[in-house]
Length: 317
Ligand code: GLU
Image (cartoon, rainbow, N blue to C red; front, side, top):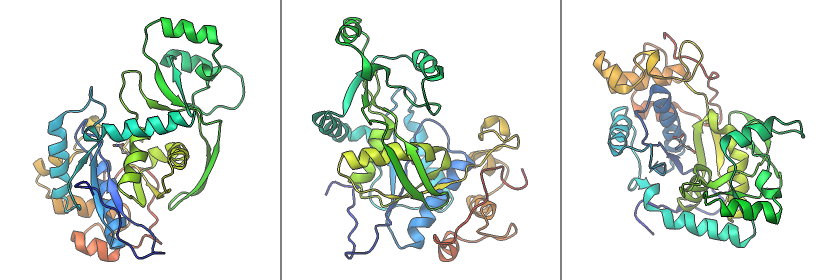
């Protein structure tokens, strides 16, 4: 087996609870990202399962290597650990290419020349139910002449899946039963980069991840990923989409909200242990005045009953 990849060694019939955290090294982790990492780690460790760290560094234009070093340091500083070597998506391009070839062989791909503006325009046209952000299928319906025109333009196409508006249902540990229509999402961008939805499914499959714990901003992407896993013959993991930490104004956490990173907090004289305790308290895993160790949190975390409050600011902000 390749270094850093683990197939769960499990007794048959036992569910696979291998977990992972998969940050993108495009910035400093904020307290919300750290809380998501803590929860992903707790789900795995409380079930005695492996926990993996995967660096999602496919977006070459936005990735900066020093963020990876900083992110891993911040995770260690709040007491998290992981099994095996860190896996980097940029080192696994052959696997994504193989998955695309498999989809293509099954007739599930088509090229798409649409610009963002064209998609926005088509999506707002009154032609049936279309969730915002869903691709309306324009390039799937091109005539041979239209397609030849676009090919002649020299503009490189993205690659989309032909999902046939499949409906996918799943149960989220925290959000309960979910159902979504799968649009023809992008699996390779027009700059040649493999798309997040493709890479995440290929890797969760290859790393035998059984339990995906991540921010609930990705709840809507899950039907796409389950559809793709099925197309690629990969098992479906279970999902827990955890609440986001928001700024005091209800917007996504950002620099302008003040001391939002571990580094900011350390500068204010807090410690990594204090930050972990605060994050735990914000989801009901500790009293505000308590300082539980990481091991204390593992001992008290119960995946079956964990019920965090909805997305919102950290108490006291
Ligand atoms: N790399 C993604 C992010 O940082 C995480 C995706 C996932 O956990 O599935 O948002």
